[in-house]
Image (cartoon, rainbow, N blue to C red; front, side, top):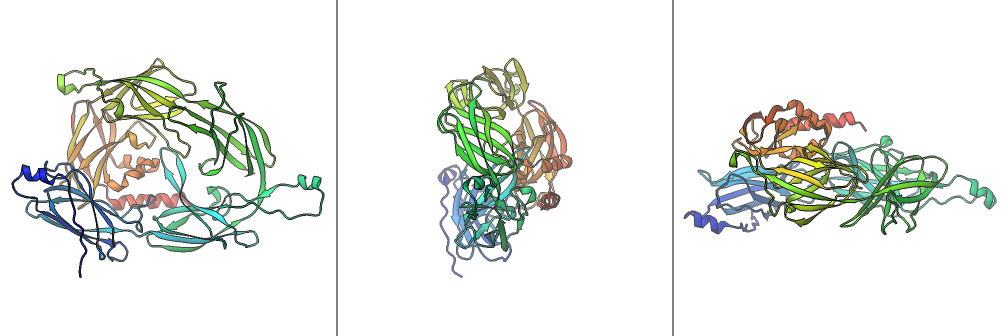
Length: 560
């Protein structure tokens, strides 16, 4: 069988040749296959990345080659070293709700066996088809959404991952959907056409207003009454029929104002979200005088979000709202205007350099500091960082909420603000709070070493340390260390008390789910990191199968 092979050009090979008189001779061959059928995947993108612990002559950057019609690929003239190899194809999407078979392979090229042959399995996507109808069984043109439950912090979020418009017969189809559990929701494109009763206009105005509203497969306007659809790899699911009935609706209107009493800036929008799930129901722009209105709302519990974001300023406000059978026309919606906070940052030098902490302010520290919201949602407004001079910057567009300082220069040792000093990375901001902030960073890490037992062959594993004290499953608080193919742990972490475990690299995203994080803490080993210390860990790898079993149990408990 003739194989089509693309030449792999790897940067910095010349440097490796200068460092070693022997030209690179490593060869990597392999095949990308369908995990269900074993057939080769044509034109899959295979990414080859140099990993830690490799000699200076090997390429540090990624390179990509394509498989031939039978799924084969070949790379030559590779420098000796460690590589991570992964594959992607649009018909084999990576899923969120269950472990993906497309794990990166960790391989070593060189030594006694310069040729390496590997097989990468990809799980095919699923397809979903159905129809949207009105109460009489007639087709109803709609936008159909696939909504997935995800954790982006301690709270669950319901995110629209894909949307399709039905055809004129109300039918819809989704292709290449990642395996997972999905809610299916229809948003009718047109309103309900009222029958024309033989009554006067005055009496007609007294009748309840009926209209179409977003409706889930399984019935209702919220996920609590909806039916989720389970899609496994390669599934072809049909017959998903969504029946949309007209319901009594009302209009809400009111006025938005700022706590400061200032005039509203232009381009302020209001989004209406379903309470408890965060899915978008409706949106509108606020008039210059602050007035707004939202028609066709069914009875239920909602949250209004007022939003405006620019590089320098932001407007943000929330208002919980209970809608019944009567219109609401006097809402008083109060929003907050963002504040700018001046910050001065200093960096302590590591203890091992001079046996005592020092103080310095690197010129490039500002470009390596980020402020991220602890929990993300469709209405999250991240602040901006503006450098003033070395060691000084301004946080712009900061609205009330909880944020995490992240930096590539070190870790956050302490934050002093509003005459209070706190340790750790979390910054909590209330409405109207402002003032000079002092941030102390430290580079005095604890060094991590040790070994991992029962390491799966060619699997990418990570050692993750979860803080004992934190309940929020925020990935920014984790300490992560690499695991070499030989099982050696290499990394560093900031001082604190943790639970350590070795997990599959593809399992990292699931730790955002508090239940998964608690499970891993129960499985983990207690470890305390102190500044300047070296800690040797002895861990046993948690298998991918154990993670998969946990996720299945959680999905069964989650119901629907």
